[in-house]
Length: 68
Image (cartoon, rainbow, N blue to C red; front, side, top):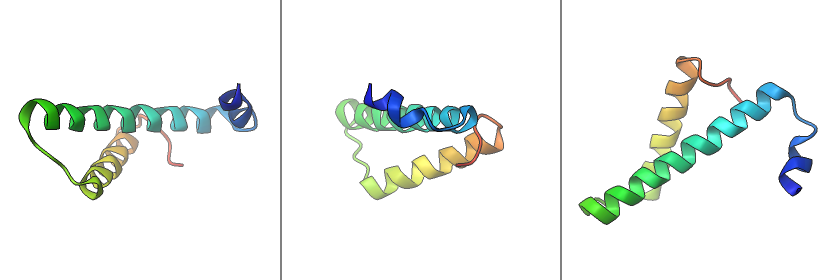
């Protein structure tokens, strides 16, 4: 209910960009978690944030989302 209320005043394009950001962040955190658990590769949070930012820019260049 709270999520619906917070999204109700935004435009459709902004909601799609927000949803894409949630998907991207969740996916990259999941990949890093699997790398840590199954391969023993630990990544610093600052490096994970940089990877998220780089991937977001790639998604924008590919036209998968608008800029926020």
